[in-house]
Image (cartoon, one colour):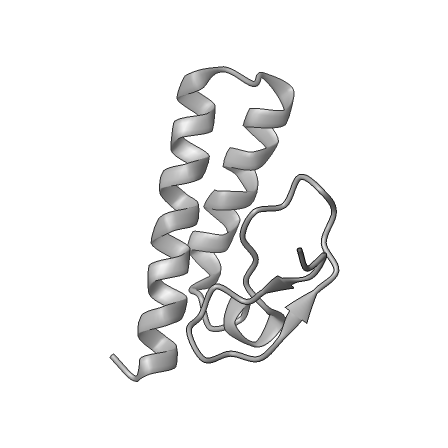
Amino acid sequence: MSDRLSCCVPFCGRTWKGDERAVEWICRSHWTSIRMERRKVYRKAIGAFKADPNDLNRTKAIRLWNAMKREAIEKAAGI
């Protein structure tokens, strides 16, 4: 098993030697293609989850992550 994570964007060759908790990752070039407002909201959701790890905060963070991943993939595809 590889100890490196590939970027979530298909056909992106970038990898990251993440920690053992990481499951998915978006490389820097695709991360910066995501709207700044969405990244700020995600950061706040992660902070809220770390402060109070309940199911509501977890669900919100996961939903935002999936939206950001979808946006990064769409922008990479030119959509």
